[in-house]
Image (cartoon, rainbow, N blue to C red; front, top):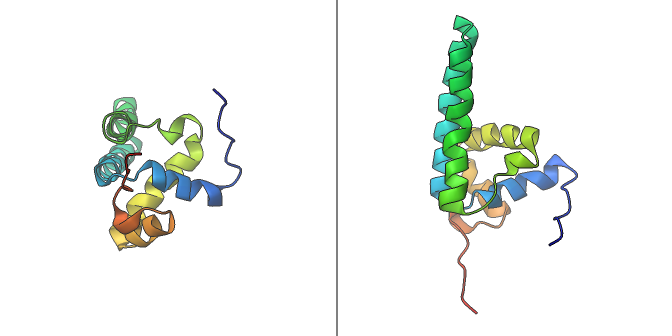
Length: 121
């Protein structure tokens, strides 16, 4: 089995990232995890708490990775593209908050923000 070609630019990565999050449930788990992790990170910085920092990492990655394995049935992009994935988690959450996520999903080939239909052969 050959390894897929590495994505060279963030411009190419963003649509890939969105396709990796085609299922709305996966996106919800990511957005909830990103929001929770952000609050915990701010609290960790204010309180100088390693426990809260650890909690932020678990809250951010735990729900997201579970969603990939149990809902999306794919491998998290974080494993190959950690920085771009983190950037995209925040970009997706921001696009959702501003109502811009649906057009971004459509540009990435995800019709109406829903997973693409799979037709049997």
